[in-house]
Image 1 (tube, rainbow, N blue to C red):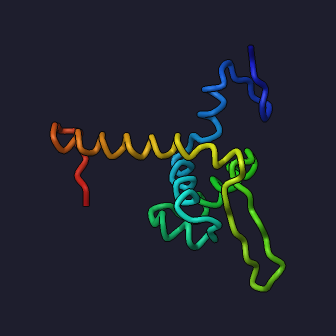
Image 2 (image 1 turned 90 degrees about the horizontal axis):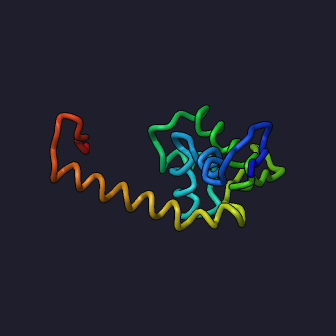
Length: 122
């Protein structure tokens, strides 16, 4: 069975899922919106200070296009925009939590098993 989505063909639903949530910042953005929602762009940037605004907006647009998040624009000056997880986006909570928990476990593993490729925390 093949899945056609956005002019691409996926051979499994796993490939489709990774295409939607893959990306350097997407899991982190979803995590932020699971912690507190809705959030404005500047609030997401505070959670993720290492991402530049252009990349953050790009990743938000992709998540919105995939219907993982919703974007609400308020008709005020200056413009007010808020992001929150959609209903299908909320279903990612156990996935994102598991990934974050695994990251914590892997960090601890690296501390206990140092090698030349180990990462140092700052």
